[in-house]
Figure 1 (tube, rainbow, N blue to C red):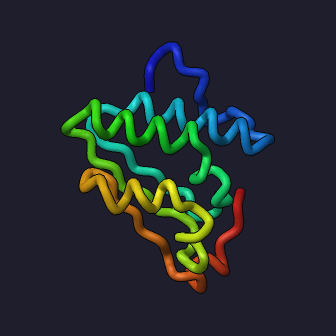
Figure 2 (figure 1 turned 120 degrees about the vertical axis):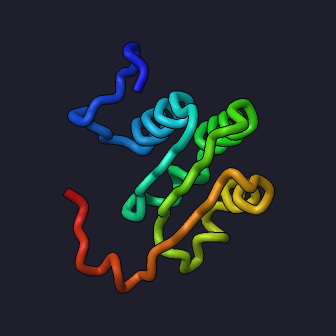
Length: 110
């Protein structure tokens, strides 16, 4: 993480805009790999123009960057996040996986 980053493990993300801003900061700091584990986040984050723009830009500007995202369950997910779905289909450096819904039933956000 860059030294001038505002991201920290203690940072509070109280609004969807806070989550989008934190995700964009995380994405733009990636150089070789970006692993995003976010199966409990709402699809609104992944449909944000800023999020998808930053992800697209970083993957195109950093040719060695590989990205793996574990996103919310796939039920209706393609419809909820068309921009990210298009990115996944077009960019081989971006891999998206979704866990089975029953796997998340026992997990709670902490």
